[in-house]
Amino acid sequence: MKGLDRRLRLRHLAYGLAGLALAGGLVAWAGLVNIGASSGHWSVTNVALHWVMRNAVRTYALLEPAPPAGLDEAARVRRAAGHFEAACVFCHGAPERPSPLLAARMTPPPPPLTHVAEHWGARELFRIVRHGVKYTGMPAWIALGREDEVWDMVAFLKALPAMDDAAYRRAALGPQGPEPTADTALAGCVRCHGRDGGSDGGAFPVLAGQSEAYLAASLAAFASGRRASGVMQFAVDGLEEAELARLARYYAGLPGLGEAPPAAETASPATATAAPGTGGGGGPAAGPGAWGLEIIARGLPAEGVPACAGCHGPSSARNPAYPRLGGQDAAYLANQLRLMKAEARGGGPYQRVMQVIAGRLPEQATDADAAAYAGRPAGPAPAARPD
Image (cartoon, rainbow, N blue to C red; front, side, top):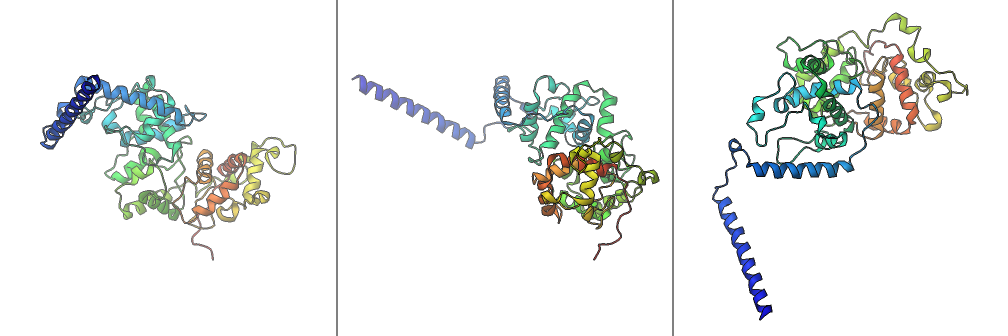
């Protein structure tokens, strides 16, 4: 009898659960579930969803990489601030716009981020920025492989609580402020690269005077997604080919990489600051500046690395499709070499060549090569591709 009673109770429980599932399905099928954002969530729903989200972020953050050295560098903050202003402010607000109208109408409403660093660790912020949050409006980073860009955004979020209106505007819009022009495409570029196309303290690559052909090809690669960047793919999204070409022409026509100061021909910071060597045969013992110049001129034959000057020249490129490296920002060059080494940068017709070369370049040589090019003068762009 006891066995029969147990089976009956289980059967009744199964019937009850099936009935509840059927009733729920009928309610959903009839369209009686209100999915309107205007009603918001019940308080218990908000609490439950936030509890689940915090637990998930805390657990999955353990799988994310450790924060890199120099996470608090000003250049990192500046690199992410312009993207935050373009892509994030309309939901999360900023010190000068703490309560955006759109956010209040969303369910759940995006939280203000002015104090986010007080509640989340660096790896947890990395997890949220990189992968987004389901069932909210928070998207994943456009280019998941660009960990360097995600860490830049984490650096910005950690610096944001200490920013007042003026500090935020300087970080997000640059020292020149907003672009007073109806040219919205150029205004978007100016937010980060400025009107002069400079590096702004090493935060960005120098665009002024870069080869027009290279800039145009790079913008096209970003627009098509062949070259991954959560920042630049967003920035050029929707721009027509003619607009991209016009932007490339604008920055290529500015004085910069194409007009080196005369003194640079006789004094290079890279060689002036070289550490005294002990080996006399190249390599780190000869000093990072001297070693970098040697790599440019002769390469690293033992590693199978050709001379950089063979394509990029000692100061200006031998082909208009190649980027000019002389006078470029050292941190930018080093980061691009590391992205190529990890095969995380592509888009150009010569990407595989550079991925192979960068993969053979020793880690110390990467920084030495970049520093040497940053200290070299920049020559004029080639007029045409050589035979």
